[in-house]
Length: 294
Length: 337
Image (cartoon, rainbow over all chains, first blue to last red; front, side, top):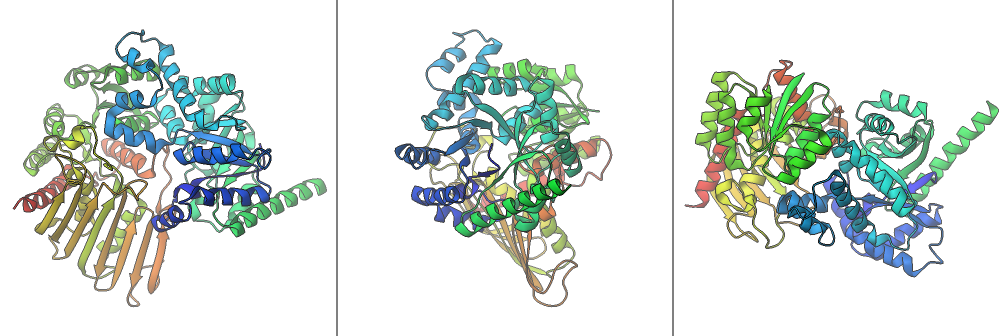
């Protein structure tokens, strides 16, 4: 994985500290061309990986990328599925069975619900696989070397003790998409323990990691201990602590943590994107230099 | 360990179940749901003992506490049965279909002496907690007026009918959505005890209200405006906000951002004259297990601590939810005049 990965929250008005900023982003990125323009700035700054949720609008972005293979030949997307609000709204409206009926492709579920297919353990795993396929459709022809399960689902399954689905997701991503499975979580220590217990070693995990203990369940000390042990490949997200930490200070902290393979960030302006990339590079070089000097 | 059972594994129920499942002091002893599929998945993959009859579940699994997350109309009969069996109860909001039912349950819970909590999770949001402290300590003086708002994209087109679209089951924007704002105001300022005018409007729904606009008065003498609309798709998710005007200052807060203006030099520690901005990230305590917002984990942790006798059981009691039901009822009755 590349050291710096570009995120998509800013494109979809996800802002953890201000509804006003969220609306401003919604206005700024109303047109797909505004998203592409910002992605191009990120690419020009040397970032070639875009980590994004399987939001409907990403399908349009994929279309634009597919049409220009030369320009985007080194470009990679790490899909994060599912776009949870889509399902959450559907569950409120249609109930759980109704939602599955709506989103599982084909007639598979219909026959399952009617009892045409036996309720074997494998069937629910198959439903999950069909949902993964539905979410992956928009990325056809695009390089997706790592495919993530969104935190709300990872953590829901984690809390419900449904380890089998986490394992099955990892297995399916490897077999069907020839890609690495990844897990986004707000509960890194607990998730890692469960994945290891189920034989998934050195997993790719994207977790909230920042100086102010924001969304780091179990606490910063336990996170730092876990990182020190080097048991997983980490992408650090929410490094600014939802905006609570000045960027320079936040990036210095996360750049110097051991075993953080990648840093994920999102930004809307050219200046913010370039500054973030520069700052991470600066700290990486400083760290490298000091390790050589010893 | 606290033995917990849950009735209703829908959207809120599954969320509660996951948070409970990760709680170090909770043992889940039973889950009750009417969906065969949900029950099968929970039995097979989570290993929970599942039931379709909640009374049988309580009989067999002997829980210390029960979570009730079913459509509102079932709250009253189910909670009443549970209280009479002497178990601690956490129930989803709104509490009951009318304040008479809520009052009866409030008195019953008091008499039996069990822990009782309702799922108004905004009370566990850092910004709103800070607003309450500021108001209670008189930081912005005497409250003269407030505005409570909530907007979100729940019903944005004409569509299929669920219990949320049936007024006799407790559906509708006033019961389901505006209740959050009313409950917050009742808690932060004082209970809304008069309604001068209100409009409940349907936009897409056939049988229930999609928006609520009301002019109200609170017990302490403050006037207020309630403006709530769940058919506003310009919001990505529910956005709840309150504006409070006092003789010494003004507060504007949502779940993310708190803005406070102090007129003079009398401001609390950590603030200054003029505008102040604080973010929820500065005002939120870390939780042990995060699923979908610290407040959802915090309210469950608070309930479990109440059961274990580790706090004073004062947040989101049946009594506070009964007062909210009374305010809801005032607004509803006024609209039909």
